[in-house]
Length: 185
Image (cartoon, rainbow, N blue to C red):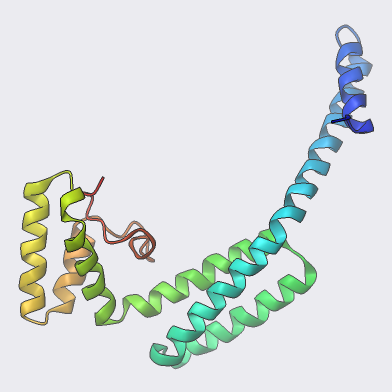
């Protein structure tokens, strides 16, 4: 593969810069230009995937908002959708990443308010019992969870989850990886 003219200029500048401050400054400027070009190329390659991710998150959010969202959450979802469409039109990758995070956060806010979500998380934890590294702790957590289920105690499941370290942030990454109480490899 042949070097681009800019890359060749940087290589030549490095050689000339060994004892020449002006050549070193010129080489540094060319290197910064090359980095900018590489960033532009990376952004151009990433953009379609970023847009697809944003649209997927909006679809997921729309499904849960439609069934379980409060009026305030519905309004916030519409605002985010409008903002994302504008950002896509303006082709602003960094702003789109931030809005995707906000959509995901709202999604988890809605689903985590549902009793079924916590039951599902516990059931996923039960299925992974054999992968748990701290079996005594896992057994205690699972027993507590089963007790919560038998009493239809969703708040207890939620508290168990929070106390077992499953939620690192407001939105639970456990939804992506499966329920983890800090005892799964």
